[in-house]
Length: 454
Image (cartoon, rainbow, N blue to C red; front, side, top):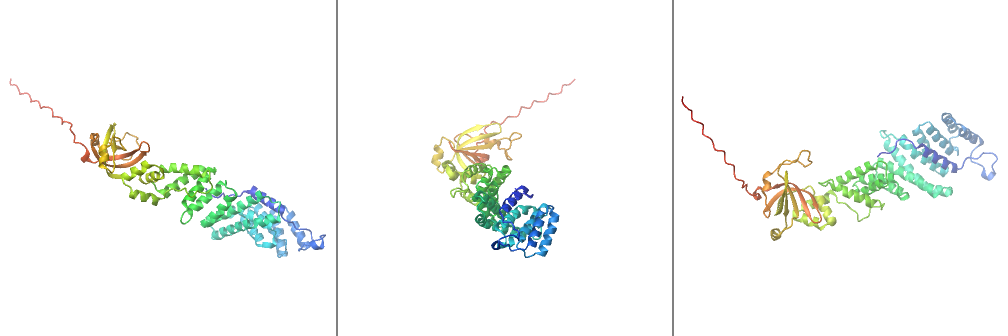
């Protein structure tokens, strides 16, 4: 997903009209009580009013230029700057509009707090249309955007004090917009810790903001080092909150988890993803007890695994079984030894049901298999998805109760009753009985008939 690169004009109009309606407007210089005498002259007032009354934005800018040239230090400049940025907005000159929002904000306490908040609100909504990522000053543009948004969030409590009729819900909406803008700019600046802080502040105001959760997830994942688990959780929350293009976000999340774990069997991630989505639906923050193994965790288990330890871990169930299966699914094991419990023959392969154990006595006494070893004795049927197979037709001769030694690839397992499934197995020829099929005798040669004389 990307930041929308067009202007949400209705939002700008709403914010500007609402906040501007709360700001104090300049009063006439004449007729006011002495204690309320404004700090500007009647000429300044009349010039400002003339600009305010002009409907054409281009003509209005000329009047504003004249005002700024004649009264550069006027206390009415906050209103002049406001007219400037709204005029340039109407002319779709967004860069100039932002220039004048910044000039208004730079007036500091010389401008009404509502005017400054209005200008910042307009700025953050104008910025996506004005920003040029390829510009030489792109970094400076983003820094100013971030700083302006953070200043806006800081000013909002002062706005509430100055204008008590601003509701808490309205204040929350404006704060969320400011934090979102700060987070987005920080992301583009690659300041991911700052982005995390901003998006978390945004979600504290509205836990159901799917876009903020998505961006928080990206910020976590792109941090150095990546905060992967928190990133996955935030992305899962975004999917649950039905973010736009949720299927694409879910696919990105799945690929990110695969990259984090690097399991041999990618399909195992699907179960993890389903569990994560289910858990994240009920909790904004990832519980400290929730975790998934990293590639390093999985590799450590894989290196320490033997077929005996694998059977013990998998049959025990729980988190240990999940971790072990992530480590060994699709792995190849050489020199596995066991007792053949049964042999089931098919057209293209044999299923050799085998029991193995660390104890030779247990192997000899076994009557139930704990492994199903699939050995291809002929090429797979056309269209089969099985990996490249080199058939071993002689393996069809293995017999019940014999010892077997083989190598193969772990394909799956049944937890209850436990049965470990192997594929692409190769039986050690030394454990395959000799072929006792009688050799066919060649047909007797018939003597050629003797020639007869006349």
